[in-house]
Length: 339
Image (cartoon, rainbow, N blue to C red; front, side):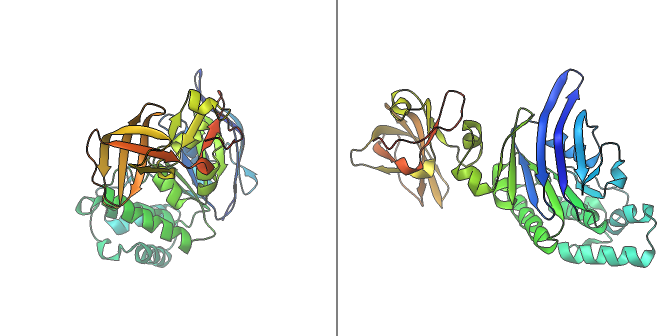
């Protein structure tokens, strides 16, 4: 089991620099999630750790050993891909056994490892089937099982749930969380653009933006204490509301941020007056988009079901204890409790 350290890592494709001076230390047994928008460099960073992309500059260390020139097969890493990467002509058992056979393990040892992984992931009944006979979720479990059998020092997951439907994403996410609990000493690095996956799986989240690390912290640290306007807008669903102009200047900031769940709505005159423009009724929650003259378009999160009509007059009250303030560069500024 291993720690992973990235020292001043940069990556360029020709003249295009996609990763810039990345410094990270990932401890043994941590579940670390890389998040960020498309093109931020998160998958490239994962592929560099795997050895599938060269390091342009800087040092990559696993358990203190420099890995820049070490072949992928020699790094003690297993990777689970978005596309499953299963051999279609092989059975599930053969897919899981292939890497072990290449490593010259004996048949009994291979069978024992496959049996243990299959039981852990509840795929024992499918061992004789071909991948085309499996659902997407079952195929992904096979891909994870194949990685487990190698007993790697580090697991890498590259957007493993993006090809699954909503229900299967939830189910497989729970299985990956359970896997981490069963293998507490194995370091896991997971790439996703879905911040819900990041918030529910990670011990720590690394937020990347345009090739740079914006912030590293626990899910709740990023949620409650974002280090930039970018992180504040990226972490949290629905997205944080941002208000500019006189309202933000009254608090000594260029931008005022308030999350939808930190705004109360009523028909009693309050801080911001507005009209309901659109509602999203989800049963457990209702998201209400309100157009206000003072703060512009504001999204409010209400618990439960609420019957609201288009154009209905409502009043909003932000919780001043929960506002976030940012300067012109998107950096946090101190709060002042003004109404």
